[in-house]
Length: 432
Image 1 (cartoon, rainbow, N blue to C red):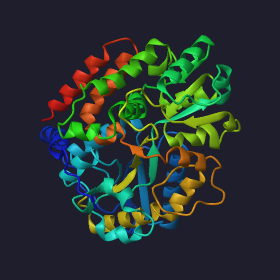
Image 2 (image 1 turned 30 degrees about the vertical axis):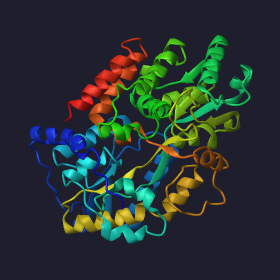
Image 3 (image 1 turned 180 degrees about the vertical axis):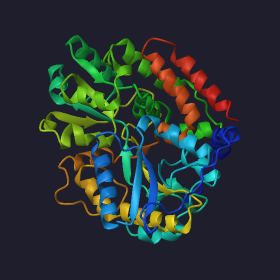
Image 4 (image 1 turned 30 degrees about the horizontal axis):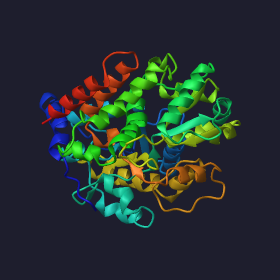
């Protein structure tokens, strides 16, 4: 497995600071429940609260595990995605993680590993050796130790667009350059159509789904790694230009006026209901937009177009292997055995096939079921041109928060791209 030590000192400081402030220490209570003392309760925290197809698959799988293992109860703590990482950090700072956690790779995983909060699972890896390639696992591997198993491959920057609305303003195909994209936005606005449905109440959409790929188009895919290694800065002109795209779209009136009061699911509905011409979100959303929608055929999918002078590859999509299932370290023998049994059951070929069947891209080498969504092949082809990094899977959360606040401010006319770049760089520098 690849070792990932780049910028590790930077990534760990946030958690270290929190650990100095929080003194409460969670205790593992061992077995609980049944009168005979044999029932085991496993606490699991996850972000599967929104009505996305993969979330329903995960919850059904948990229910099936409990059905087949009546002596093990999975006590679920479902936390909305926008609050999940914050709660995970808080619990980690108090050494009070649940028994099983959904984790992200890179910047989010490293502090948990550094704090010895997660249990290495190397001895279990034979369960997935035939279906998970090294590339799918390496994001959850630190210094040769495997800490989690991923459930899906997600691309966060898919542009869903209404073909009929685009045809109405003279575009039978999605624009392949930024200038054409802005032209389409302008014409849609003139035609009385909201160009882009945005739900940024949770703040992550502009950061993850927009800046991850817009930034990559301008800076190239090495930029974020170079920032961690102090070979580049967020104040570099290319990144400032990426931030300026949000400012330009705001000034053009591209977004719905209530964007900051609407959450991501409401924004999906806004688009599906024909109130906007575009919506930019993850590949998983395809389940709601097209797969389970009787009018799905009228919607197309595309990637953000090329930008003049940009260093990035316009064929790339911003993607990450995510929703790693990890165990807390220090579980007693009974709980650890139950948690391992759950992990082996939950993440296996059946899970991956069910996700594929519902149009979700997975990192596993499994046969595509015959009844898989007709839209899956289109999504796979769209995202087959290479993978760009997702901003918040590389950059520490404390810095991400500053960017998200700045982007939201831009949408209401406060601040400038240059101001945001300086604030984000300062937040990064302050972690040293």
